[in-house]
Image (cartoon, rainbow, N blue to C red; front, side, top):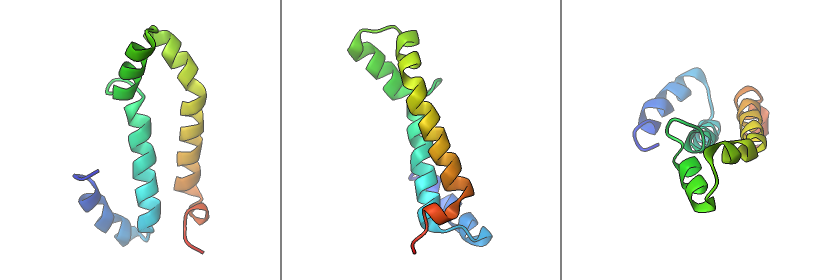
Length: 85
């Protein structure tokens, strides 16, 4: 986030995107990236802590992944949900 926000913020301003919407999109994308392979740091840590196999953890994670992707799509394509009224 520290590296890409200064790059994306001016670009978002040029296309008319609200900074709040950009921030939410970046945070949700970061969350999705933390629990999906190949980086999936929290996926590997949670599997190790639970002493469960990776497949079991991934199967349990699918509903959360689906909700996160749905929220990301809503934030991306329906800006009225995130903008200040």
